[in-house]
Image 1: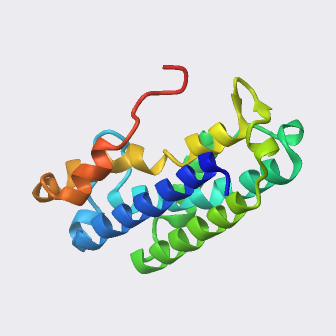
Image 2: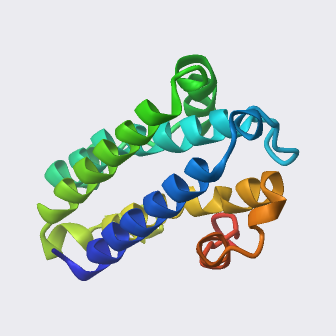
Length: 172
């Protein structure tokens, strides 16, 4: 696997493990609490993270197979709306299963990338750098869970997940 995509795969492995751990610590009441920063409940935030992984897998495969020429930018607003509509009521165990399946599909896609494809330009970046950036999305929600679970604020896994996050917006 190309090093930049190995880094992306490692990030997916770690961050889905952190997310699973944190969600499994939550009570049903905590899952229904609303995060002030996003307006999503914690269940909806989990669903959003799952849908993000499911949503980026087809374009990731297409970028790896066909390159930048056929790439169409992702519509984050449409994805966020779909997360609320489609996934907010799904039971946590199913969401966690779907998250693991999406992670595994992405890693399998990454394994098929060539060096030439990962360094191919895509906008102001490369395909490899874009795919790596897409994997940072889960970590951007670490603080949402820390806000909702104050008793876990000093938990080493949640702290590691939160501190590893890159909270800058694109272009910063």
